[in-house]
Amino acid sequence: MTIKCIYVIIIALKLVESKMRIIYIAGPYRSEHESGVFENIMNARYAALLVWANGGVAICPHLNTMLFGGFNDLPDQVWLAGDLEIIRRSVDALWAIGKYETSKGTQREIQEATKLGLPVFYRWEEVRHYLEEDKNDES
Image (cartoon, rainbow, N blue to C red; front, side, top):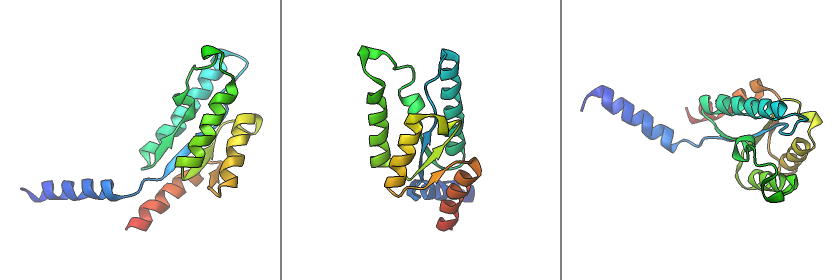
């Protein structure tokens, strides 16, 4: 086995052993027009990709229930209730994106995260710093 192979194995093991921070992506979903819904989904998707690319795990409810509206006549409240349950059980922090202040659902998600004592971020720089902190703590 070469030194290079051993080095790659050590890095892989370190990644498996490290705790990745889970960031919940909160932002508007609904819009007056379908194009607005699509734009909101794509904005959340981009935010999730930034988290993943910087060593975190992204929970993106926009993608989880994408285009579920109207299914079996379920009210929108069903989706929000599920999202709040995800926040309660499985995230380390919440990142509010887009026009979060105009979204009742996003405001409820922020309220839940705050009640639980989770960090709430409003800018990418804050999220990036939070993810980098975790990497620095492992060194």
